[in-house]
Image (cartoon, rainbow, N blue to C red; front, side, top):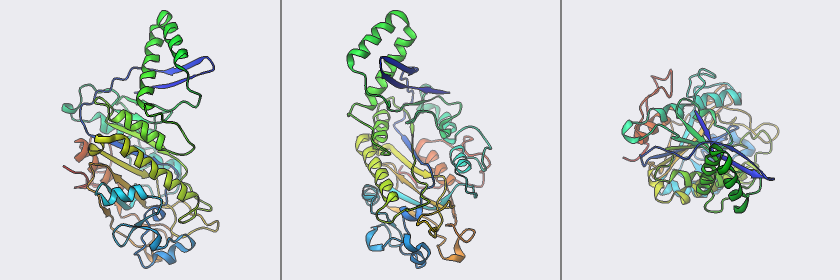
Length: 386
């Protein structure tokens, strides 16, 4: 069940899709999932600069240890992750490395399907693991099972599809309508169509929540979306979970090192994470953010100074509810004999063990059918604060 609250007014016309803001969750816990579409290069985001094979394996894409942001002596962060690095050293962020879904091929579509459904293989189900988790929230934390999730997108991503009611919100691509136009429409609908009047009032209310800080869009920046998500999440009756998508991670050519196109994208993500923390305010301490992607990139660069589709990568956990300040990894190494199929970072950690641990210890949700065919994948302990 999907509820959209998009408000698009321009050229004298209004396009709305519907109902009222009626979030029913009473729990103070919040979960944000940021899906990086295209396959983020985890070896560029958190390079293993202490691995003796790293520089030779990465070639022209190897980052100098002195230019990375220090984590634990083995791993560093790309220099564009200044805010994430500060959260790490404040104990509010952890890096999960050499992680992957069960998928071992190299199709974006199939890999994203597995990432979002929580299935063991592509197209094994048509609903998302996060929707299933929201549907299984403990009864004492929910007063009404309506709109427990919110997608900051024009349509509901697969991860939030299912029986639990969720909502969508996205900024309009059209110029904002002025107050007089909205007032005239409210009067017109109020006299002629009560359903449209209620829908318009609901959409205006949603926009006022999301845009109350003058938020505006800007290219591929996700800070406007994370700021909007924060406005919804910190409401007393706000959604339990929000999903944000970010593209631009398929770096087949001219990837760059400390500079270049990937560095710009890292910077945009870092700004978005900082904006989310700042705008959540006190709600940050009860929030966990998961940043994940469908697969990693090849260890060695290709002939276009980029990387091709790979296997394992890294994910980020952050928030006031995270036990951070650490890299979580069973590091497989990047020497030739240690690679998956001789080309990819080998996966030693199933991302589902992290997601299960977050759902159980942060939201109080057990298996709940969120991850079928995964009985052998046990939830990871001690990811979040008590």
